[in-house]
Length: 197
Image 1: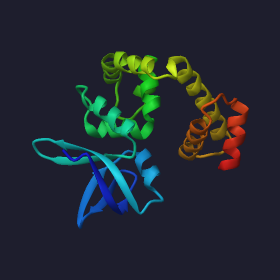
Image 2 (image 1 turned 90 degrees about the horizontal axis):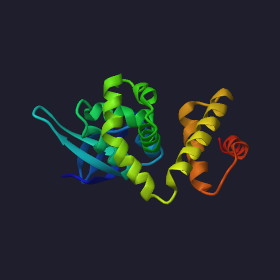
Image 3 (image 1 turned 180 degrees about the vertical axis):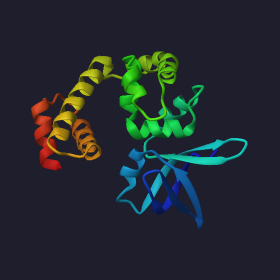
Image 4 (image 1 turned 90 degrees about the vertical axis):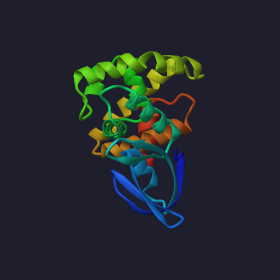
């Protein structure tokens, strides 16, 4: 198994990248979040999953180990292939996917292209208990995750209404929330986002 690739980025597109490792160019399919993370880099370390089928061998790459972990959880579910899992990670970050699953939010999962009601229900059924346990193990606990999520959603909505692109607004908000692990008000968050955007 190829765990990661470290080398020079030859090509970077929203759906894939080509990375040169010792003179060999690897084509790696990626989610949008990984594209955003590598946009300004010439060299990168890409965490990978090597997927083998009868008719194809494909590499999938990620910037964060949490993305790869959620990807592997998703493709372990019947009816969800790697392309659908990549699509899910392009539409939502791992925290959002986990929160939607724990909160039984079928509509949010179903809003992702390629996911029907039955598949969304299957995702929740198979992963809800696992993610609930993970939530209890992490020190932050479920309540702070959900309050952080509502703060994130409210500030995101405000920034989009102010004319920001969804992707850039999400990146700015996530950066601020990570830097301010202590409590931050909605007003402070929006003000900081406006200054840094």
